[in-house]
Length: 92
Image (tube, rainbow, N blue to C red):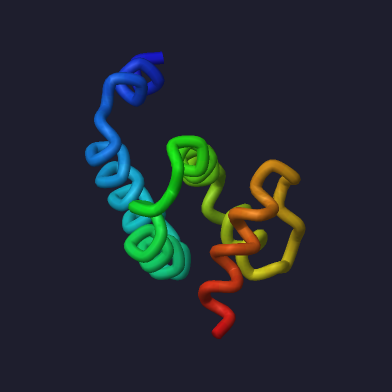
């Protein structure tokens, strides 16, 4: 509950910095690389709703995230578009 209250009061700049840091320090090196690159390239251009969805995605388990991004298992419906975007970014 404290984290939710802090998120309401944080500025957009602070939120982007927090999400960038959470993207860089995942626990699985592969996810650190994928998500930190994505965050650096895309977070600043995201709407508040998109940032909220990305924040929710970062709360998911790293093992699940890795499987979703690499296409090993399908992502939950609410994350489909975001996971697809992250996946496409690194399939080049």
